[in-house]
Length: 525
Image (tube, rainbow, N blue to C red; front, side, top):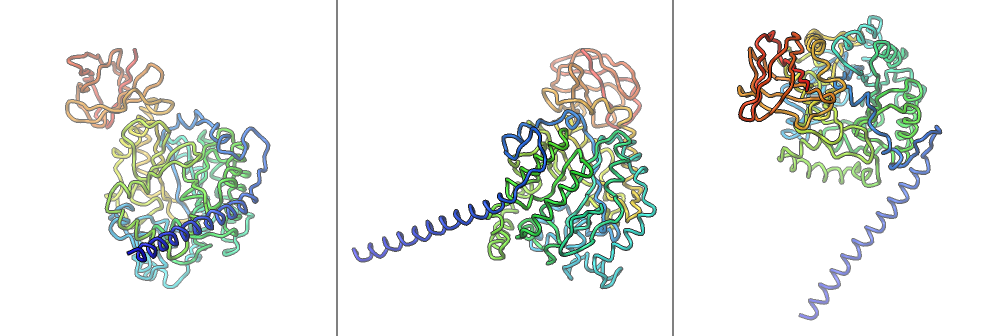
């Protein structure tokens, strides 16, 4: 028995020793990796912001962004030529039901370049039918030919008419094609960029209409640096990029900042460098654009994240996540992730909050199931204008905004009728009711119900309260469990409506409503 105990003891001590040794080696290796990455951090500006978390977090949310409740994001690039993805399921549903092939069968048409690499995918079948064996890069020819008909001023006019306060364009998506004549050389795809300055022309047109302008950059994924097919979320989010890509991404984003001074710097997936290089970049951005904002998709890289790019480790991660996705909360977490050490606003994707959030957020969604145009979608596959208006007002009531994805068609950038109609309908509502959104802040509660079960959303501007009814009430509106006093005016008609309180409910005696969806009542003390 004593001999057995000695053997067990030696085994335990040996195991502990191995674990401690591995832990020490990993810690040292991680420190060395971070030291090497930190040594490449450079700031290029002088100003109030420096490359520390404390300094960056002193950057408050600019009032213009807190005031702006509606924006547009354009997913436009080579993928706008084939404009195809399988439809019928959301990204979250695809992840939960077919995790092992989710990234080549998801509904995002902008992922065409990756999906076509899987010969068994619907995208690959579509490509063979319509384009044979042509490589993805061949779409450059059709895209650039279509640019002869592209009119950035027409885009800016349409978005302004829709009531948008800002416009964001995908300067470089994961396919690696840049929409500006970048001087940063891609070592794997030289010259893979537009010769025409699409970013600069749109920036000029948007700003001429009084709107703010932003750029989207896919910092976490670039398929020109990893040509293999990405099937799982682990493949997509944990590829082991090297210093060649890190240097490339840093240089391109610095170029975007210097040339266009974007009001919004919107990164996707994660950022490929360590924290010090990231903080240097963000500090330079704020020193260049003091009223600029950055989103929350700037998770920086560590050695641990790099190791997740190693096949066996990533396989273990995929196996774990595949099991975890049986819980809907896990899928939700992929779209509403934890906040990073520094960001100005959060970005839940195709999801929204129904309670007032402490930190400003932006709901990001396409009109359909894809951000880029998917010609397989019909009008029935698009969200209705009433749904979109509901999400817009809901965001404002809960300390957020809505950024609506528009997918233009081909290089000509035609906005298809189904999307154009939604923009026009949103614009008509905004023309009558914009004061209930822009420049407002959340009230003490964000919502209530009418006696008919319709949802009512609240925003405020100082002492003035706005109540938006998500429905088409024909006459008086009774708000349950809400006491309001003062003078009410229906914004759509300008008609006054008497308020009365009974049993903790408020009755708005509006007898001349025009039948429009989501009437707004301005209630002044």
